[in-house]
Image 1 (spheres, rainbow, N blue to C red):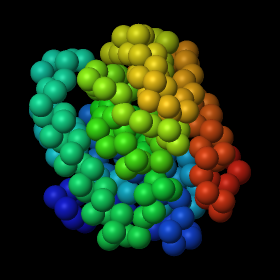
Image 2: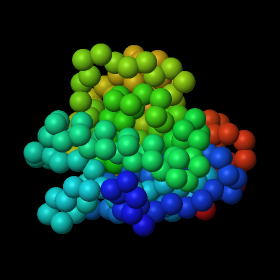
Image 3: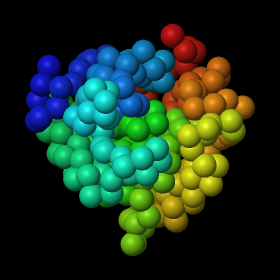
Length: 217
């Protein structure tokens, strides 16, 4: 379906007004890619999954880049504001409680999720970020107390310099966010066990009735 300018998919949660995940795919993905991951991370939660509006060689992304690992900062900022507007629209349209909304993003999706945290503090309760980079260096780190972030980095990731996940964790921590960063012996694609670790982490931060124990489905 389409709304507020984004093609997207919405999966209602088991409890109206309960926990929800904003799913943000990587380059070449779409609104369906991370739905299985979302169900694994938070069984019973509502899932909101938009498709990136930028095309790179026909592959959807959430913002432009000038080269591998080099972001178009102006476009990143504009697209982050645009995505924030969509999240606010969807929250009203689907009855999502912003205080119970976490992002879960991979690669390009993780990067714009991090940008949302920095440019729109308070929009999200927190985020699970698989293979993120530092989207940009803010002039002033926003206040992020009450925000929780899980970062999964790959020790053999050929696309992300190892200092990026650590710098992102430090930036978010400077703002007062609770940050847990873990290194995995994997490349750019998440390895076995990462989703389960993220599920366990998330289950302790979601409201009761969502993200219940039971393992990855």
